[in-house]
Amino acid sequence: MADSMKGLKRTHYCGDVTEIGQEVVVGGFVEHIRNKGGVIFIVLRDRTGVVQLTFNDQSDPAIFEKASSCKSEYVLMAKGEVMGREIVEGKNDKQKTGHVEIFVNDLRILSKAQTTPFEITNETKVNEELRLKYRYLDLRRSPLQQNLIMRHNIARVTREYFYENGFLEIETPMMMKSTPEGARDYLIPSRVHQGKFYALPQSPQIYKQLLMIAGYDRYIQLARCFRDEDLRADRQPEFTQIDLEMSFVDAEDIQECVEGFIQRVFREVINVDIPLPLPRITFADAMNRFGSDKPDTRFGFEIQDITDAVRDIDFVVFRNAIEEGGSVRAINVKNGAGTYTRKEIDKLIEHAKGIGAKGLAYIRWAGEPNCSFKKFLKDGELETICNSVGAEEGDLILICADKTKTVLSTLGAIRLICGKRLDVIDENKYNFLWITEMPFFEFDEENNTWIAAHHPFTMPMEECIEYLDTDHANVCAKAWDLVLNGTELSSGSMRITDFELQQRMFEALGMTDEEIQAKFGFLVDAYRYAAPPHGGMGIGLDRLAMIMCKADSLRDVTAFPKVQNASELMSECPSTVDKSSLDVLGISVIEKESD
Image (tube, rainbow, N blue to C red):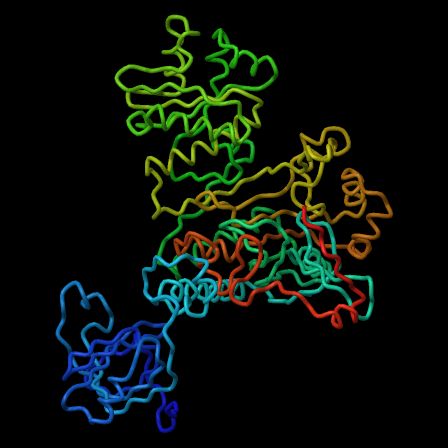
């Protein structure tokens, strides 16, 4: 039978026991035990760290016997005097509590543990699937605990900063009307209104705009959001967004406010100073230089347009791309020739083909330039290409010729692969970047139509309004993204507040009056009663925490994450529901026939 806590009250966390001579009471899990016969050492762990409990021939025999019965992961409370201990260089000299131990005079075994399915250690080679199945045990490991503590601190600083800057934290509904916002909704059937559904919010977008109309000019919320989309390392079906909206402001006001937050949270949480203002480039520049709308600027290898330099070269790949309105572009992988052998270059070529390109041409300058299309070159043309990209001996030039969109996306992906392969990305740098002048529309090739690149409430730039009905490709939005080290942290925009312009925008997206009323009628009606100019952003708290923790995945900063197929291995959800529960909702499940 487990011992009682009666008479004991915890006075210190394990990691805070530092003062010799104190009498303390600690509680935690047994990390490991060393029984040397006449002396027993138990390392006790809680979320703040570890402390060593000591038992010897001076201990009460009953307490010594109880200590000898303890095993890993038992839950203990211990009372005793803090004493100094010998410092073992390289072993305990780096621990906050490495210079002390507690000589125990009262020990309680509050809960016994059976043998765990894996050893709970800081460094583990246990496969992630097993750790996620027993997530409550995995969460006892210090690395995950420190990640979640840092996430908590990010949330704390977030609230403090925005409260100090006049924002009100207002909760918006978790059950709302299903509206088109880019991803599939998670739907909730209504028992009362059978055949009708609520949706879990993809974001609080509509509600925060309504709050601006209602006069709450500075809104903040750490909002839970839900999107039914395929998962990856930086995506979960449910996530937290630092959601904000501001009235009587312009884009620069919002960005300046967010910059202040970024500087504050990095300084207070990880003691890193982020210089302001953050750099800015346009969407077009980001694509042309980096092949991505979320570029990693911690290293070079920028894309360069060499179309003019190769225009007269009699190489059919280049000539066809140029004649068909495309372009020829290259990246100069500095000092890449020594790392990239012909075999490794072939792997890059296959990767490029997998993205959608026809392939890659290359010049590998090791000793003398080795060019994959050398037989098509006249005297001086190879030198012209090398000069156009600033190549020197030791460099590797990778060239793509195709439709410009394909060229940019291909070289953007290859650039990242090469940067990682050559280990030129400084993991201790935090390169923020504003991406501005975002396109308003994007073309959906699958459905052969133009759709809103952001959401249909985004304000177009004034000089682009005339093109709304005639030239979708040339319409830019008052929208921007915040990027950190190649990860999109946030999107923001100014909102349309003019009722007639909003109606025109819906029509430009091909929506009928009936569709507008059915999907957004309440919001459209609200704008008839006047609205202040407003805009806002949603900053991904999970992604921010992932980067600040230097974690590999969102799963490392989420307490109970989902895996690739959106299931949770620990609780085995989603799960089936009994027929009576479905009958109440008026729902029947149709089994899908297997192929």
